[in-house]
Image (tube, rainbow, N blue to C red; front, side):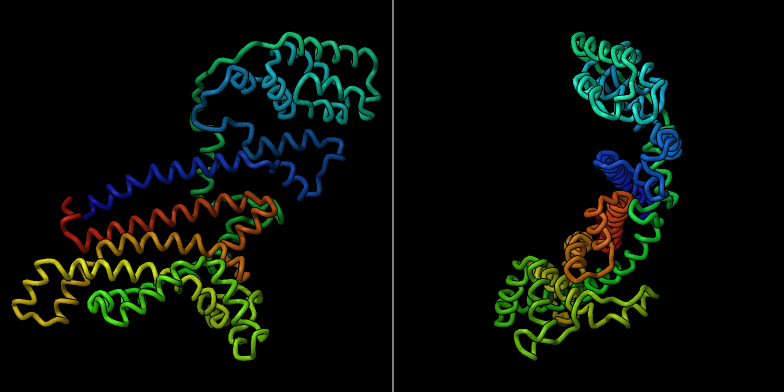
Amino acid sequence: MLRYIVKRILLFIPTLFLVSCLAFYLKNSVPSDSVETLLTLQGIDESKEDFLEIYEAKFDELGMNLPTFYFSIQSNYQAWIHNFEGNIHEKRFAAELSKSKCDSEDIQRLISIISKLEAIEKRNLYLCQNPSEILDRLDVPQLASLDLQTKTEIKSIAMEMEESKVRWHYPVFTLHGIDNQYHRWASGFVKGDYGVSLIDAQPVFSKVWNSMKWTLMLVVISLFFAGIISLILGVYNGVNQGSRFDRWSNGVLFIFYSIPKFWLATLMIIFFTTAEYGAWTDIFPIVGFWPKMTGLFEMMYDSWDKLILPVLVIVLPDVAYLSRLIRASIIEENNKDYIKTARSKGIPKRRILLQHLIPNSMIPTITLFAGVIPGALGSSLIIEVIFNIPGVGRLMYDSIKSADWAIVIPIIMIVSIFTVVIFLLADILIAWINPKIKLG
């Protein structure tokens, strides 16, 4: 059994590695400047005279000056940029000009001139992305103080860049070792160092953990009721196939399975939280007001009436899905020869049901139920937004709207790890139930 568990864990490691690489790529690809945002939270903006120096120091402190990954296959100009000796603003400027296929010697000549200018003049020129923009920007009011000789030199180099561009770039393979951004980010994630929010500078870990309590409570309660109800319905309908209750319940469950959860949630709020359609419809409290974060049992006690509708929205479609699968599995097992043999020997129906039929039919059901758990986590995002539950889904939604990617990326990783662990536990449970799988 231990050998089987070790094998399954080793198979999941590449999955988590790929998910972490994707999350890191998304983190680096978002259209925002985390360094500038963090400096703004500290009360430091571009109007400060030494802003460029402070920015560069913060950039180095966050490790953003390091290579991105353990290795890279990049254009030769990118390899040249990596070895370029200069501050972050000069590197970015050189990288943009290199993308335009400007010659590296011309870029170095131009940077050596710009580096001697005033801070406001450097800032304006470093924003340019190609020689044409440099020529156009020389006429802006912020560069009016440039002396004629400096302006002429910059203009001459920019025109030379425009005329003598390189024809193509060739790929270069570079090995960077463990001193890179990904290794630093992944190590921090494993240690629980998720950084701070880009909106309020609060620790990411505390914000995600406080929200995770609400989500876990909602999901655990929903899955508990979905599992119990599905098992009872599925077994009863499977054993009593073709009965009137079987036909009617299958029809009703198919309707709930077909309704999108966000629409079902909206209908629940409209018809069961207000008296607009009659006093009898005002059954549950209005959504949006939740008690202050306390212990788990205190949360459940203080908000049990508000949790009924969101739990129903998650439970009903899951019951419709799982109960039909359990029913089909029960029917399939019920028609097998070993069940017929057991009946012919006079074994009581209750014993056949509890010792043979249900355990053997649960093997495929466990795998399917394991897939329902991540689905419940995913559906909780929209459910939490609609019911304004302060869970991870709501936090992720608000963070995406405000471009707080420092919150979004850890949530993606945590949900991915949780999903992998659930499938691992499902595999272990199946191996425990079915010795053939364990031996294999």
